[in-house]
Image 1 (cartoon, one colour):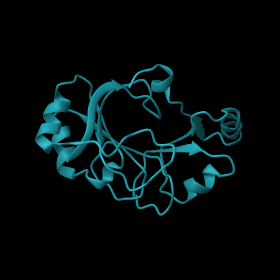
Image 2 (cartoon, rainbow, N blue to C red; image 1 turned 90 degrees about the vertical axis):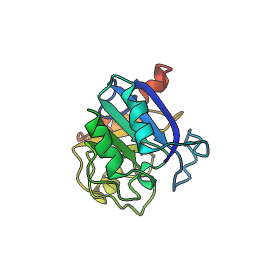
Image 3 (cartoon, one colour; image 1 turned 135 degrees about the vertical axis):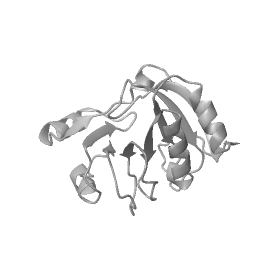
Image 4 (cartoon, rainbow, N blue to C red; image 1 turned 90 degrees about the horizontal axis):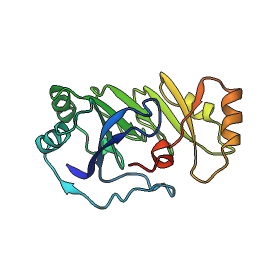
Length: 182
């Protein structure tokens, strides 16, 4: 697998904000979002066993498979191997590609259609003025948790107003950036 990086930190956004987590950032993405802050060209080729061994060096239970777009590489066998190592597997996806059926938590942060995802535990949208989050949510599978996140550098007041008028949504901030951690 093409691995951009593996690191240990706190989950900085979404439902599990503040929880210790091991991040496995896979390289490559099928979207070209202008606001993305990750270099997906850099990677180290690693076997599933090497990934599991690297992740097992950290004490956290949660492993976040992210990217790029993890669905381009993620396999059921890697998820099973991480489970066998005592880890809970969370996946952060843009929802454009199918993912294995066995992660413990799926966060979908869709960017542009078409979407090809069957299960979402958390729908996390970047709030864009003029785009209705409820319309996006209606085009995707039902989630357990709904979060809106302001775009970096954009005013937060419209996000707060939207959430107050649509109470199933909650605010997600990139707390890792606020705390200056990875």
